[in-house]
Image 1 (cartoon, rainbow, N blue to C red):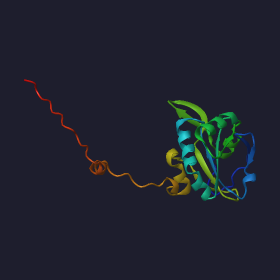
Image 2: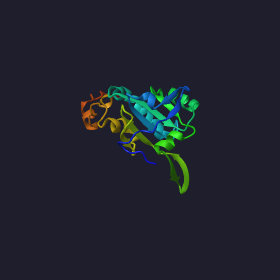
Image 3: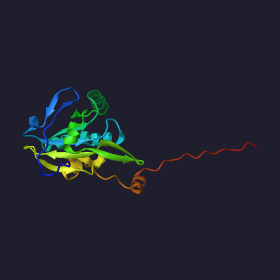
Image 4: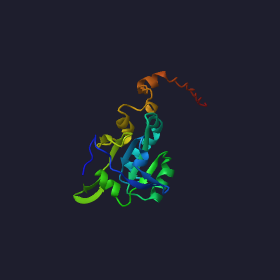
Length: 184
């Protein structure tokens, strides 16, 4: 079952990396980013989580509480959080009940082999528990931009000058000429 924008988010109860229970009803009154990702410490999942980490203040400023969720266990989440210094909680959906409720436990295919796995999808849930947006085509390196709808303020930086301009601006090195005198 695919969850659509405007529908009520399914109620869930799952443990975070520290074994503490997290329920959707317990988050009522808060805006939530619930991002489903396949596996801790894999390249795409690390890029996505680190993008959210790097822009966490902008997400908080916009009023969001961020939760990542995968089928990994609490111990795996603890290692991932420690390694990447993630400031938000990761939810351990080892029995895949939350994945199934949100429609993110899907059949996938790689090299012609079919298997079940997590679809990388993010749900933005409003203060009343309604899904305000579903992001199905996640750009792992720019995910915060997708959530906030524009480049995150923390990440905007001036453009780098062109290489030619850098070379032109660099002072020229002075070289010493070595004179070798021939002996007669």
